[in-house]
Length: 104
Image (cartoon, rainbow, N blue to C red; front, side, top):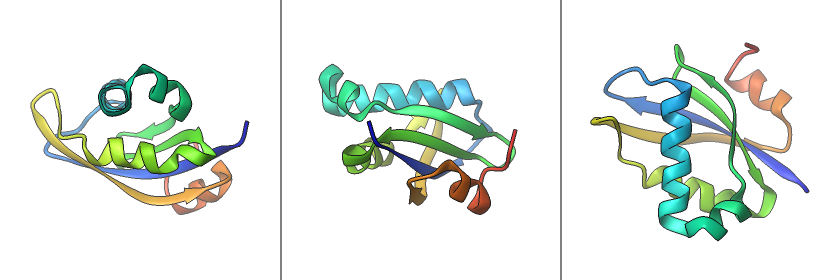
């Protein structure tokens, strides 16, 4: 199983929590690709920095485009508009942390 890691900036009207973001990400992937698609994409929230509004998400290597599509089609969290923007895709978490999210 080869994974890719995606650094995402979450533009939002209000501050969101990691739980809210994870719930919306899961819902969005399932909505657009179904349960089987969700299993194939296998998205996992690795880290969420609420202060910087950045997330690191893991997914299957050949399913990065599906995850990016589902995130782009996400419109709101609890009534607040959001726009997740992919900043970088990498094969390692270390290189993403150098660019964005810092150690927790």
